Length: 309
Ligand SMILES: Nc1ncnc2c1ncn2[C@@H]1O[C@H](COP(=O)(O)OP(=O)(O)OP(=O)(O)O)[C@@H](O)[C@H]1O
Image 1 (spheres, rainbow, N blue to C red):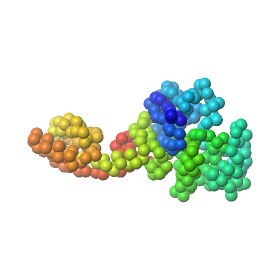
Image 2: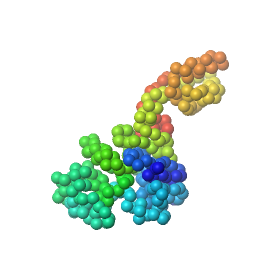
Image 3: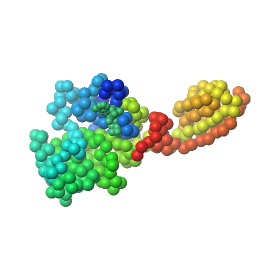
Image 4: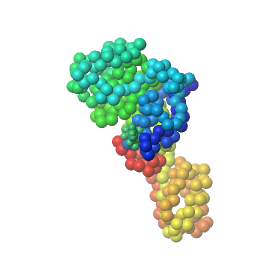
């Protein structure tokens, strides 16, 4: 059974449709990553699931528990990484953890959390003196203090240098070893690939694609983008498009004027069928080019946007 299931989530702020239609389920023990560009709706999605923002539409279920009936039980199950502004800068990591522990009936020991997030040697320094990476590690520790089953981390590595980012990855993988479920948002494709059991790419408040990293990568590395342009114009491109979009080896197509783009996982068969058709119809193909897809390309081809790292 899914530990978390969300169905058809929607949220608008005035005229801005932050989340248009998001549905997915998360299995116990998974690292589930939501990735997308600025303003895609990642934080709004997370905050609805965390019970911080009321959805306009949709359902959120933690097993049999729902926010309207079982808020206290859900709060015991989940841990939310606080924004860095919610930490007390003039206290030490140890004092922050001790304080957060008083909010719960059951809490892990501060020593255990300090060791988990590798802050034992900084436990008595003021938070304002910590580096960005150390502050983020403390934020993860604060999310863990109640020993929750599910941990929500909203862009825990944004703005950190590569070493500090890797230190956070180690902690997230340790949480998985402890049997925790982690729901993560990120801007970094590499991070999503390295950590996630499944990756959900969102853009403009909708899911673009959702799969395991190997399945996405296989798709990316196997799929090729073919560009064609026709000497005798738009009509040839149109009729060729009508023909090729029905081929089983073609994933999708796009016609702009006299040029045609298609994405295929079997270039040889696709081009064989394509050229047989154009020769038969006496359409004159002016140019052909074939590009390998990269991870970034797939994102761009799905969303029409540049990837921002
Ligand atoms: N409280 C709010 N009031 C008005 N608009 C909001 C509010 N919260 C989010 N938005 C808008 O909703 C859209 C989605 O925002 P959201 O923060 O969920 O995206 P995001 O994917 O987390 O972006 P980022 O990567 O920049 O954090 C944006 O256009 C944002 O400006």
